[in-house]
Structures are given as structure tokens and as C-alpha cells.
Amino acid sequence: MAARTKFMQHPIPGPHVFPPKPIIIRTKLVKTPNLNKPIIRFKSPQNRFINNHISAAALHNDLLTTQQGEPTAAIKLHLFAALQGINRGIFGVSSEKKSEIDNFVDLLESLNPTPHPTLSLQKIDGNWRLIYTTITILGSKRTKLGLRDFITLGDLFQSINSAQGKAVNTAKFSARGLSLLSGHLTIEASFKVASNSRVDITYNKSAITPDQLMNVFRKNYDLLLGIFNPEGWLEITYVDDSLRIGRDDKGNIFILERLLEAGDNP
Image (tube, rainbow, N blue to C red; front, top):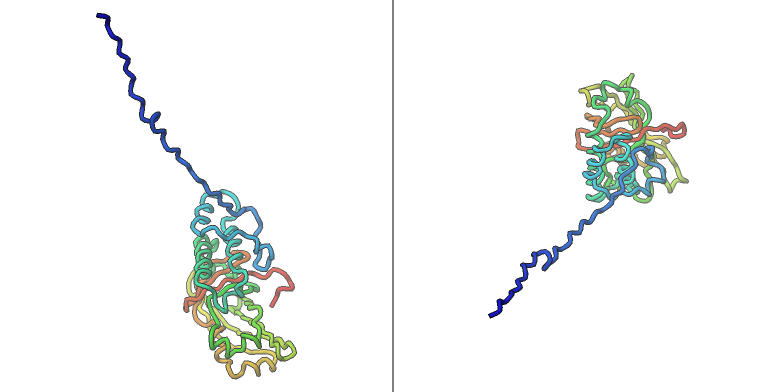
């Protein structure tokens, strides 16, 4: 009997039977700020074009791995973008906006180039403009002060003379119903160093000029003064050549930009 030849097929490897499912890796490109770009001041119209959809944590990680440029410059750009259109926050902001601003403030404070500012008081000397505060004028306070329709709150300035231990805060106002009457509240205070980063502030005196504007505020002058009175202590948590951040004993945050232009003086 002739022998039979039996053909046997070797097992087909599994991957050839069921090809492995391809692994798709999706990457998301995030445009990080150019750290070599000059710092844009708060009033610059270019701020409105800044992409502000990067998280503070992601931005911080990117900055830590960046070897060129000023590390705080990108944070400032995003902070200034976040401050656009909120009128310094004095009439209130949403909780989301406040949280966003707080994140950028925390980042700047963690990178403070002047950790002991009261040992270098020349850093805080000069004229400053308030660009953000957590002090708010809301509800009945705003109504009593006429700050809804009748009176407009203008710029808020601060002039500091560290050699004399003096600070002058100026709040500008205009009254629409009085032939566009304009004037200002001036509060003079003195301060003394309490620690390497803190000063104690004492209220000295205040005045509103001209008299016509004083007449408008006379009935609620104590209310107005209570809002802008700086007495207490102030922790200087960040300061460089153009920006200063402080926190007071009432839990308020203040962000100010240095005035460099001659026409910007209060």
C-alpha cells in the first residue's frame, strides 16, 4: 500500500489572525507665550489679542523649563489680558474671573524678584496706577455714592516717597450732571517698615476738591473714606520695575503698574 503524505498547516500566529488595533496618539499643540516679547502695559490695545486659554498650572510648568527670557513676562501678559474689561474689579467680577486672576497673582508672587522689598524701598518709590483690587463697591454703597449713573470713578493713583515714609492715594471722579465737573479724593498716609516685606500704614488726612464735588459726597463722606482708607498693614508680595502686588490686613489684593510717562502723573 502506498504511503500517504499528510500535509499539516502550522498554526497561524495570533497577530495575523486578528491584527492588533492601531494605537492612535493624539497630540494637542498649545501655543505658549514668547518670553522674549516685551512686556505689554495694561493700557495697550494689543492685550485683547492674547490667547488666555492656557491654564496657570500648564503655564507655570512651561516657564520652569524655559531657559531664556524673563520668566515673569509671560505671566504678566496673561494677567493683563485677564484684567481687560473689568474696570479694575472694583464693581465686582465673576468667581471664575477672580479665580483666574488669583492664579496669575500666585504665580507672580512665587517668582518675586524682590523678596525683601522693604530693604530696597527705592523699588516702590514713585507714581503708580491701580489696575486691579478685590475691594468692591457694590449694592447700596454704590447707589449711595452715586456711582451707577451720576458719578464716574476715574483712575486711582498712588504716589510714594519712601525717604519721608509718605504715601498719597488719589481717586479721580467726574459728575455728569454738573457740567462734567471733575475732581478727586486725596488721602495722605504715613508708613513705617514692620518686616522685610510688610509696612504699617497710618491715615493722616483726606480732602475732596473742588468744593462742588465735596458737596456731592458730603452726606456719604465717611462711607467713601471707609472704602479707600489704607490704614492697617500691607504686605508687598511682588515688585519689579513695572508692577507691584500687595495684600492688606483685610484680605484685599492690590495690583498697580508704575507710571513711566510724564503725562501719566496723577
